[in-house]
Length: 271
Image (tube, rainbow, N blue to C red; front, side, top):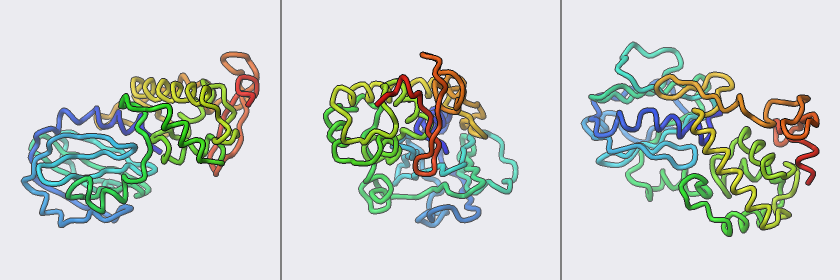
């Protein structure tokens, strides 16, 4: 599933190229997770002002309203001058005078939703529950620790939930917990403030490095200009079950949490 780094890499790969473009065509294919929420033709001639990110959502600001894009489990975007006929898994096209933005999503868990503003019911429903943004310079330690203190679930599951801090997906949660020296099964409300500070710093470090590496390409992720990510090649624990820890040489362990694989070092992450 594309997580915050992959979504941010996608944004960076086309945001400058689509800014100020005029919408010339809209094609809606097979139904996605949620309906578009407007008549496609009503978007014609609107101008793209810019592209932002909130959690794992891309917000394409228009001169009237905005489009919220979510890549779901397997979605990806392409922005190019190629206007070839859509393939089997190409479910939404936003054509502009500067290029075609196309959503490809084999599993159709992604979505494109129109909202009149960020305060409209459609936007609040999708964005209103999201937690702190970790990479915008406003990742406050007190708010983060307070959010953890309200949760009795395992810290790994709380990070994945997205209502305390957004974008810490499965790969990045395992990596951040390793850097912070925290066992993924530790209850969130038992994380002390000093350890929360280490975890906050680890989350920022891991996500920022992942963006610089182009995200993680485990199966088929690539940015809107077709580039794959390489963060997975430098992972400390993720996907390395049975291999020696890069710090202490203890074999990395794997366990299941909420139907997801978790990786950790039993020596470096004692509690």
